[in-house]
Image 1 (tube, rainbow, N blue to C red):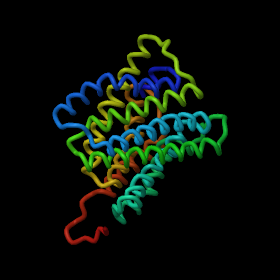
Image 2: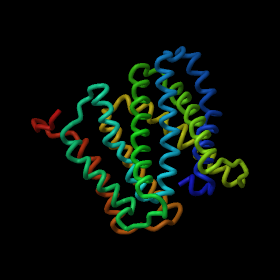
Image 3: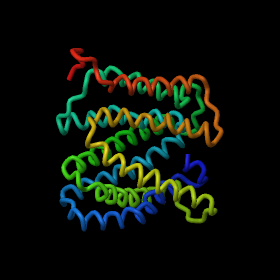
Image 4: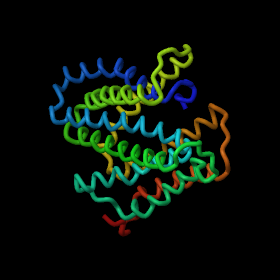
Length: 276
């Protein structure tokens, strides 16, 4: 929503949301190092690699939007709901519950409805390229979430450090790629700067610090499913603040997503077989 209100290029938004966030994260990083010491060098490398994946995610998703439209791109990037737990399973051996596996198609179906993809509206472009970019963005997003979770599990006292390192790496990645795609401009109106600053403070600093704190305390499939609420909440903000309209199918999709997330992670009744 903030990106839309900022009315600037996607490359500019992707780069500045990370670059401006460092103005808050770096002082917090210094305080954390003084209090808890430095993050292990291996985990610093994980955080930097996570940031590269995040920067790639930002740029690939933007390019996917240009090819297939925002609705379809929103569906494609949410392959993270499968990719994130799958990475945790393949690399870390974390087991996915049968309840989650059964409800995953329902979650993705709800996102499809909520995005409006079934009502058309795709942009002119390359559907095949856009689809591949959208799926690639979802996988890159999942890789970021997994590496971010790894740092939180192995050094829970360091919350700011991994986020700061990954944000810096994402800024460099998005900046380099953005220069060769949509371009980056600093010539914006005061209102646009205000929305970009808000995006950096809330969408980059606050959001990722909260995710970094909460993700290690949850199973990967739980984190992935909860993040599906993001596009639903974005639609709600669009309806209330931007006065956008939604079809009955899109509203139904939002209900399906919320219900599926609740069902897949509700506590089973005592004695019920909930699977691994």
